[in-house]
Length: 470
Image (tube, one colour):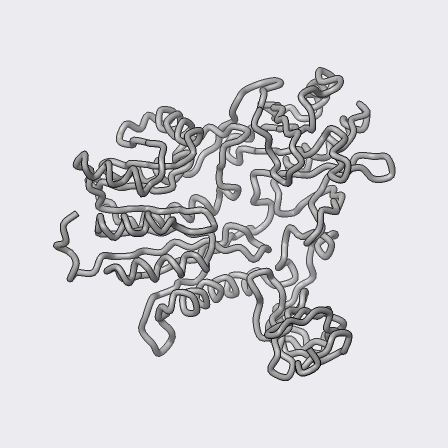
């Protein structure tokens, strides 16, 4: 690639103009794009090129020539080693602006949608809703275990590797998560427990998963092992209970597969309850070892509050929640809706959703397992016609068949909750082409100090299509 404007191994002064979706600085040298980990927009940096492709390359930051006024000192001692956070070196106010810009860029570049600016009309993208205290916000830790110099270590993987960085605290985790991991290390070492080794598929302890109820203070500990038995298990249970009185549940998950997936298929309760409880707003949820629950309960209430606002409910509407999971958004909406219908392809999640509805005494919500694009038309044949459809899909976005079903059903409003700005933009384009207008989008910072951003978008059916039949 001798004809490229940069060469591997050479040093250049790069102008940093943005941040990538991976948190790297986006630099320019002679018109060529270089991704530079650790660099920030507005900086000039001396870099050394390490890899190049036809249109871009990667470079190592050697020295800052001009430093951004938004650069701050990371507070985490292992920040540069650990891959958990990417933006601790950027002030929190600037993080919120970067995340809004990420949403704007995707809407424009991928969705080909007009975004309102100071002098132009288009979709209003609001400032990112951030946290007043953007630390200690995670209610769940999934910590891999290993061995080093004959002792147990537990932490997070170094960025881009499976090398475990041992840690004593993680500043985005609830303090209880740190305490559990520390005590499990001590107890495991005392009992002679071995850690799982990927390269040999030997050793016992793979992961420790901790869940904590922010409102209730209840803690669940899940020991994920490479085997169906835990040596000296009674001593293990007694040690955890003695060290951690807030623990209400100790579970054992068995995973003997050579895989990066954390959980295996079988989970047993070793001691205590099968679930712990927590709240989002006034809605109570039962949380089991395998159930999905939003990891930032403080911002989840903000996110769902915005979805509820966008749904525009008056108490009579029929609402469909097309990716309902364990019913978190469904039950939040059911507080204001006439009837809510939740659909989810995972049957275990639907079972949890029904239990959560019963737990809260909510009778105006109905859950069904199956693909949304199959279940929704069947509901329509039964006379159920949604006024509002809410979608909260996984990172890959909505299934194309579901988008087609939404366009066929023509609800007055669609509320799209997204964890991926790129697939949000792609799907909004489909809905806009099908007769909807994007009224506004609000980014929500669910994961401070990382590059991830969630968004809530409101789509309204165009008036010209208002009389279309179902």
